[in-house]
Structures are given as C-alpha cells and as structure tokens.
Image (cartoon, rainbow, N blue to C red; front, side):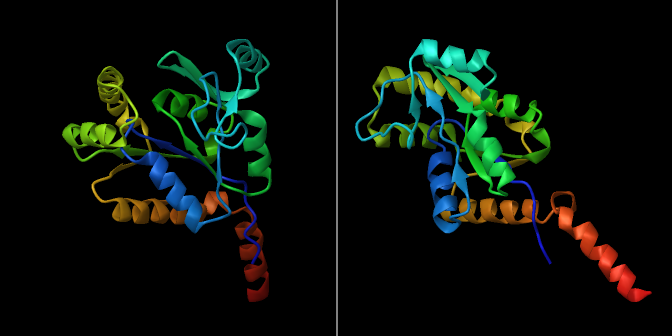
Length: 211
C-alpha cells in the first residue's frame, strides 16, 4: 500500500546545553530521509562553519529584507544576533514527503506552530536532568566566557518556562534512552491516520473486496 504523505515539521527545543543538537544529529544519522533545517543568521561564522551547510550567513539588512518579503517561517533575536528559518526549503521538503528537523528556541517554535503549516508540526521539548548539570555541560564545551554562560543560564530558565506548550517533553538524563524515545515519537507520528492520505483509498478497496 502506498504511504505517500506530506513531510513533518519536527521542532526540537531546549535550553542551550540540554542536548537537542546532538539528538538531532543522531536522528539524521539513523534516518537519511530526514533533513535538517538550515537557519539564516546575522552572526559571524565560527571556525569551520560553511555558508549554506551550517547556516545561511547574511547581514542585518539582508535578513530584514527576507522577513519583510515573507520568506521566513520564523525568526528571533538571540544574544544580539538574528536567526530565522527560510520558508522555501521547508515547503519543498514537505512536498517531497521528507521530514524536517528544526533546532529552534521557544519563540521559533511558537511562530512555526502559529503558521499555516501548523497541521504538520510535531513539537518536542528537551529538559536537562538539573540546572547544575546543564551548567556543567556548558562549561565542559569550553566555548564561552563566564559572562556568556551566566547569560545562557538565565535564558535557560525562561526557555524551560515554556515546556507545557509542546506536544512531547523528554528529560535528557541518558542520551541513548532519549534518542530512542525520539525515534518512537517520530515513528508514531508518521503512522497517524490523518497523516496517511493513501489509507482511506486502501480501506475503500478492502470494503469493495468484501462485497
């Protein structure tokens, strides 16, 4: 039976350091059909980052032009830099039946859920086991100053306060177990009756055979 369907928009949100980027990579390693939504940003590229692969790097004027033209599915300002999701690649993936993973904060999640694509959204929030562990993870990355880490911890409290807006909430105290839960969620959402347009035709065929 043909299982054609539109692609899903899988929103992963969490405080910085809770593991959503690692989990997203793991999901895509196991399932090559998944695509990662590449964001546009006004921040400066970091060492090793490639334009078009890691981010679409642009200046503030270029970013604002995309917003005003309606070319952003969502956008927000984080620590003085702007981030957003170009709409066209997402719609193309949906038309091809490919699922897209979004690594976005609660603001981005709200905007995607409020868009005209909301019926295709599956939203998942990743919680850390504790704020102490979250701060330890941020310091272990050794990428940010004490001042930046303090800012991220403050933002984490605001981020966590939006947990109840999501369809699913997972506590990432074990990376392997959390990945398994994510894969189970994805499998179940793909099998939902309302996401499988070919199912109705298949059932009608069965009923005709029964006559």
